[in-house]
Image: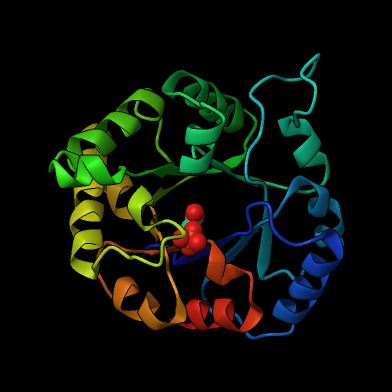
Length: 245
Ligand code: PGA
């Protein structure tokens, strides 16, 4: 069976001390057979890794592709690894929109991460106008082709997160049927490119207003292997409810 994954994306929320309180509370809970990941701000990572239980993984929300050098304000893969961080989110729609991360930059980040054994959660997803025009599949296919499908080998260290932009932080969720349709499509693209063993193994998460009230229905769909959760990952009880779903 594929890995079940619930990843929280805190974005630019919580102070390090608040994050610490959250991780202590979540570490006390029984997390069963779900891979639980918390993507916290850079400032929190070292601190959280000192207290986190074995069942929870602390991840970063971004990283620079360069090894080191004159990149003011940036953080490298080796800096993250030195703090014990082994997973990073790449290509979140907010980074694409506000920081103009394009296909080529993301491709470079993917390559840098995988060459240094960093796991990635690669985000894709269409904006509302694309969904309305019915072109969401070709839009998502292009995101995958341009930044991920150049990889020659299997996708062992890759998780994909499908996050329709119109559902992120809006309270509007894709229906379980819409999520399933896109996830099955993404899986079919992976099968075409990498074969059925890889496509059946890879975890594809849904993101976009996942909440305790809708998680179970979304996660019950065959090709939805868990969620990338923003807002609802900021409250321990909500997030725990989603993990249990
Ligand atoms: P949301 O965010 O759950 O608040 O919609 C999801 C995300 O951006 O990863």
